[in-house]
Length: 185
Ligand code: NI
Image 1 (tube, helix red, strand yellow):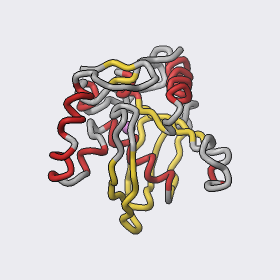
Image 2 (tube, protein in one colour):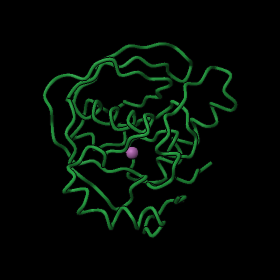
Image 3 (cartoon, helix red, strand yellow):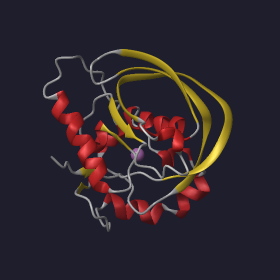
Image 4 (cartoon, helix red, strand yellow):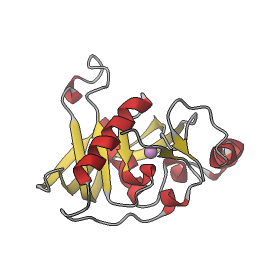
């Protein structure tokens, strides 16, 4: 089922998301729906539960849809993260353009560490602790931010933030032009 994507301005995106346990109702269905919603949006590679209005510590990432000539290492890279905890951010700080399905029509350069170490449960509640570097580490940090009630625009300079204020206000009012189902504030 395609779920509406909650846009910037909706308070659910600013809440600290809560951990879940195995008994969380209809979890498998929710994870399936999140992937389907993300694929249908056409330009998302990651989606966090707060973006579909559910304030729990869950996000999904699928990098296998990227251009395999450019990113051969992500050919089969599809992962579900439950109750994740980033324990370390390290390596070079890199500037790169980011977008977000909750901020349609916007993209900004964000500085992030090139590598992370993260503990998480997969969709079977199997525990993992792994390190990721490069694009995967960037997407993980972006999605993880959503669980903390943060968005990528929180990382940009105040001047830049001021420059896009009008666009942000329009998004918060639901005045957007996007092809997927959405819910504004
Ligand atoms: Ni996002």
